[in-house]
Image (cartoon, rainbow, N blue to C red; front, side):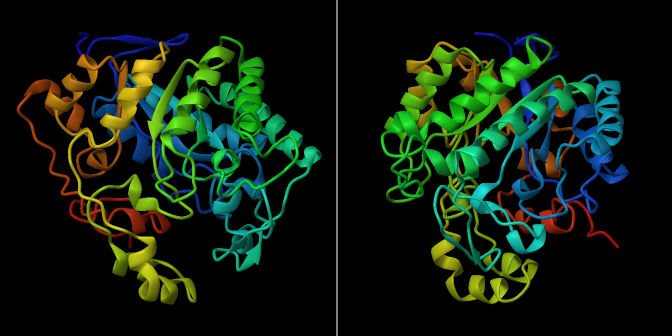
Length: 390
């Protein structure tokens, strides 16, 4: 069993340890470009001991953002991203960029561009129906992932993470509930998985062995009729056989239909209702219990499902979900996972990894109240640890 604090290789990249700061949207890019606040946000966990910090969310095209304030990968973004990666590297950590297309999770009204989904769905975010992409649209999006990966290299990133979860575009194509197409991109799983596989291959061809390529793959949407474990396992086998990825990070839930399936713990419905403009805020007040369901928190809460991927696949896997203490990290290593990923606990204590390395009995101060989640619209933070921005 490897020590979680021992160096490890992720594809062509050497990490100082096996702890990755997971991608969680920072809410610090008001002009869709890097800010000093975003740099400070990632510098803190890098100085705090993580092996790699993941920048989220870097959309591959303008309509692929969840809203117009998010970074999208274009030449104008590169200088700021280079400042960001330089700051992370100066603290001894590697830097990863999460690349993806929000698809039906995009806010068309904010982006002033149609949201894209496998079919024409009504999106309450943009109060409009989504656009159903044809072959030309999908080819453009696939190539946009390759172009974004090339820009990530230019910006100094050591890795890219492809977003194949949470019912963002690629995940929505995997979902039998959302993807009712009858062409070559829908129907049987091999067709629904086509977008994920072509994106992964295109990105690998774009970057070669210069940087690591990982994917965040949904194991279970947590939605009746959505992607379930058995189909996701097959997608994982195909992705491994294709050989385009250096690792897979395993996740669950649907940002579109059941976000708390990933974020176990309390469901901050009132805080979300206050964070959204009307009529969305009113809708959350009325129907929040159906959308923001509550699931109990426990350490390593995704382990049971992730264990099945570990049994089926030989490629490196990253365990996410409820990893806040050394005993849980050791359990992940003992189960055969090569890396662990943390997010909310690092908002409360960016130096938690250093604390645990110094004293294995350290316990995270995160209470799993999830009140950090609605703060992404004004700057993601732990409400128990940091004051709101002025």
